[in-house]
Image 1: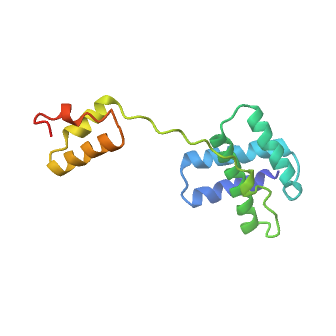
Image 2: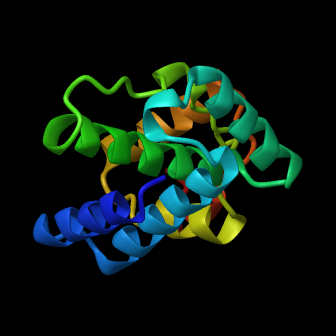
Amino acid sequence: MNPELISHFHRSLRRRNVSGYTVRNYVQAVIEFSQYVSKSLQTVTFVEVGRYVERLQARGLAAKTINSKLSAVRQFYAYLQHDHLPGLVNPVRPRDFLREPRPLPRAASEADLARLFSQIHSLRDRALCLVLESVLKLPFIRLTSATSDGY
């Protein structure tokens, strides 16, 4: 790829007041992609992008990291379409991005639950918690032992 176009992209990101880390990471990702494909911008296809994603996966990179690199390349092509090469096709498609795993919710610790229930002072709120405890069979809600008057 043309180093001059990458330099223009760098200046464009700076002009838009993008974070320094983002500028650095985007430019580095574009350089890495350009070294991988080692061909002209106009000839890069969806196939090369797919192979690039497979290569990044083989290196053991996380989906979030791969998506970040793809986003940088996609932004670079969007910049080129807008400012330099109006007919250029962006080879990075939305379906090239990987699905990122969503972590399971963590259970609240006993200390957090105790702190939460120590803040319940109204009879109405205590009653709601007791109903939740009995209906949902939530053994971790020990409201009766957490309050001094047994409500």
